[in-house]
Image (cartoon, rainbow, N blue to C red):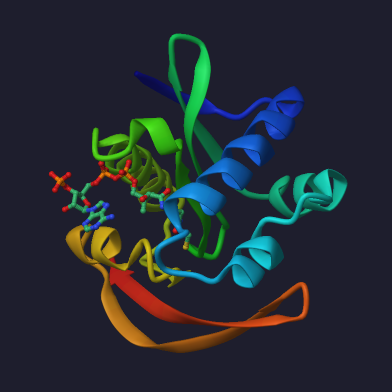
Length: 153
Ligand SMILES: CC(C)(COP(=O)(O)OP(=O)(O)OC[C@H]1O[C@@H](n2cnc3c(N)ncnc32)[C@H](O)[C@@H]1OP(=O)(O)O)[C@@H](O)C(=O)NCCC(=O)NCCS
């Protein structure tokens, strides 16, 4: 496995990975309506690309295929982290997170933050984050209560 910056023509592969991961990996923690709102069939790739373009976007590759993705903003906010459903529990998210954390340190960021899904909370606790409240978020008309998590670096 190796990790590098996401290229401009790879956003579509990431959208596919996110859609598959949400509908499969998060299915135990969310209703079908919530999953559809989080990762809709008509995912707006242009909006996604525009939102992510100012961020540090890193992808993990296995045999040339994207198997994980992380996006971190210049503020230290981690706005996406997904591992491919067939590659879970192999340390991919850990490696992506450590690279993003290193990038943050290099860029003078002192605190990382994020709004965690129920599915990812244990992972972030393992990475040294602490719970810091609840974030109420709206996606496709559905309300999500995510856990705000922070880590001083
Ligand atoms: C959360 C997620 C990114 C973790 O990816 P991963 O590549 O499987 O994570 P890692 O293999 O690096 O896990 C490292 C450690 O985190 C913890 N961990 C990871 N997933 C876990 C889970 N589902 N339940 C409990 N602990 C978990 C474990 O301690 C694990 O170490 P171990 O496998 O030796 O026990 C992945 O489950 C995912 O994509 N989830 C769905 C998308 C999502 O919710 N993203 C976050 C949006 S805020």
